[in-house]
Length: 343
Image (cartoon, rainbow, N blue to C red):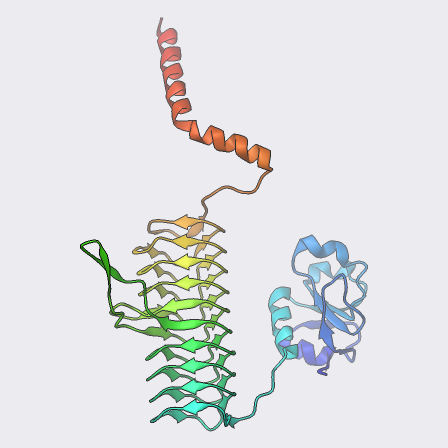
């Protein structure tokens, strides 16, 4: 079991200690259920109501909240960032031996670093290179000519198609498929003719890809995932999509082919992109938005309707269908009022 003193934790997150610096912490827990050996944090004001009665051994929080805290404190200007760093200290690390498991199949011409860890039943095709300290968990399949950098983690049952390029410090979660064919079809006299997808996928460093996310290979050039991009679970990335550095996309979103998304964007869940346009840097798109054209200016964008009671939604849906007729009636009434005013 891992344990750290407040002094050790404070050094990692550069926080000020208020309380017992020798207090030992064995884990993290929510503010309202943490015990005396747990660390917790307060960053969102919605949870301030739990602070006064918390039983936690220590709370990470902003200095302005210190007066209301009944226990040990780690004070920092960015509590959520500090919490993320502490969570890394306590993160679970499955054990896997250095080297190549005897049940794995390794193709010809492969270059696998001596410090890499290759789990059971992994299949690696010809001419693959795998960098230092990279971990490949059981059941992973890696196609011909792939390059995987240093300090990467591929969780069980990831599939990497041929000639995909993955840089350093990349994490790919279970079930993800990288480099499958893009959806390219030509209509040949009413029948669909498959277009071979001749490009690949380039994943730059420090990218994380969620479970069951799929990234299609390019039709000619590559599909490109920029440095520091974070992709949630069950996202579809079409062929020749380019995602700029440090953009984050939440679950169940779909990005159609040849969409270019800028840097530092935040895309909420279930957002759809119809494809073949560009999104500027630092754009925020709220959940369930349908993006059908380029966005050229940074800002927050939304579409769709928010939740309401079923009966209210039905009434509004009926009225929505009447908007055009109502607009014409209002226009006629305005004309009538103007005529009366002129008399």
